Image 1 (spheres, helix red, strand yellow):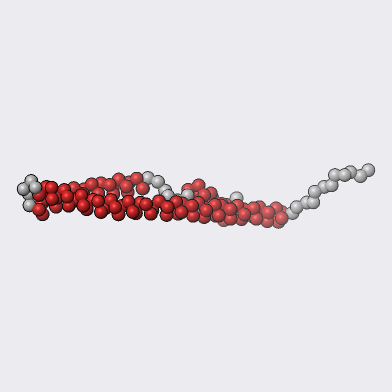
Image 2 (cartoon, one colour):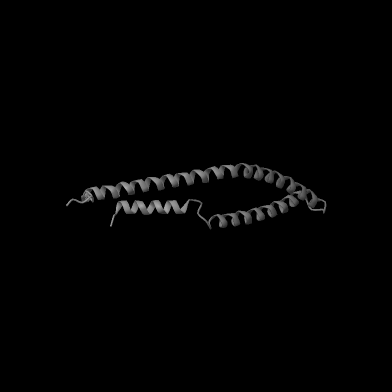
Length: 133
């Protein structure tokens, strides 16, 4: 009596380990590609945001200079010497600028601009490949 069911070919241990390693390498490649794509996309978005930001900063700096001169000349109308008026306005602008730089630095330190999920998954896979259990 014959049966239609065939026994599947036995796979030896080497073939299984090779298959697992090939799968791990493919996963590593996919995650590296995903990380590369995320970094590329973040860089593209940063470039797009940098142009109007740079122009805005330049125009803001120019406006601040003109405003500072205007304020100093306005203070000179009160009877103070011109150098004292410019010093007062300069110190005020420096204090406000320093406060804004400090606040921006503190805010920037509160987050990581790198793609965390992909980098962490890639790191885990590298550890797994290097030290399989």
